[in-house]
Amino acid sequence: MHLIITDAWLARSHAVHLSGTKLVLAGLGLSLALMMVAAGLYHWVFLKGAREGWPVIGTLVKLVVKDEFEQRDRFMRENLDVMAKKLGEMQAKMVQLEALGERVSGLAGVVPSEIKRVPGRGGALVSGRPLSMEELQATLADLEQLTDQRVDLMTVVESRLFDQKVRKMMVPTQKPVSLGQLGSSFGWRIDPFTGRSALHTGLDFQAEPGTSILAAAGGVVATQEFHPAYGNMVEIDHGNDLITRYAHASKVWVKKGDLIKRGQKIAEVGTTGRSTGPHLHFEVLVQGVPQDPQKFLAAGENLPAPQMARAMAPAPAAPGQR
Image (cartoon, rainbow, N blue to C red; front, side):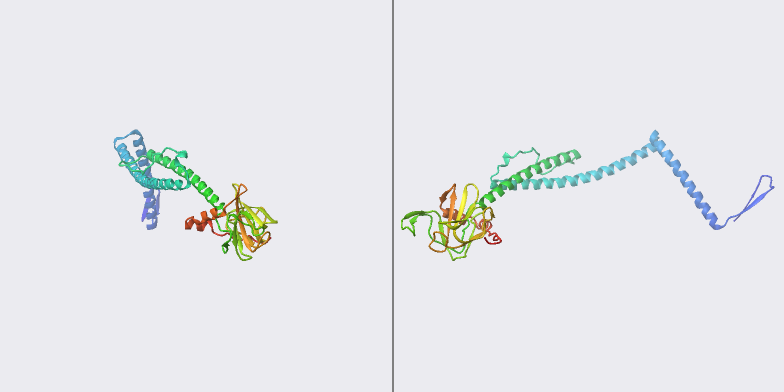
């Protein structure tokens, strides 16, 4: 394409040659410039019309804004409905948990009414109308308070159950010799050395020498010594002025101050001290007064099978030998 440009008096002329590529680039540049100018004018006119409330533009702006608000409100409503449903499910589960807590607290001897309660609305979140954000927040606050209350109750129940378990583990209800036969019982009998009537303050378990002697309950070794009458003797303090005594042992596996678990091996059957043959002399003393050990052992035998298995699970033997 050739263009000849002349001045007004035709004195001078200038020829311009435009190829196809240059024409395309020129067209694109001109189109881009026109688009930018149009966009700038549209933006300016639209903003000015929106600010000054021009009839047509103002109505168009209101329609656009209204549509955006409706879409946003619909999105929020859908999310609020989902949140309300989930919250209702959580509240229903909290009601079930509360009922379970009431039953467990009864087993632990805890009265839930004694624990500070926080007023809440409770119940499942059921409503026939859409819920607002404020209502959801209020329900969440109530649920949080109820959760804190349940945590407090369960903490007290756990503490009480743990205390009960420890107390049971500290009561001598386990037989101290698993492979022994009961000989002399608690009470008055003819003394084998003097031939006179004397009070036998414990139970005798006849067993082979070397048979393991097990702690009847958990506690702390209060005494480990050789006694003229009891021979090699071990006394375990279980707290609450309750002590068990194990006498005539051939070997002792613990020392004073050791922490003892229920069923732990503490000694071996022997015939040391004032004894006529290999056996274990087992005593239970409350505030220093001998009690019939058979009453304690019978209480252990009357426990339900699962509880008995847990209470009498043997502990590993103490390492080393004294």
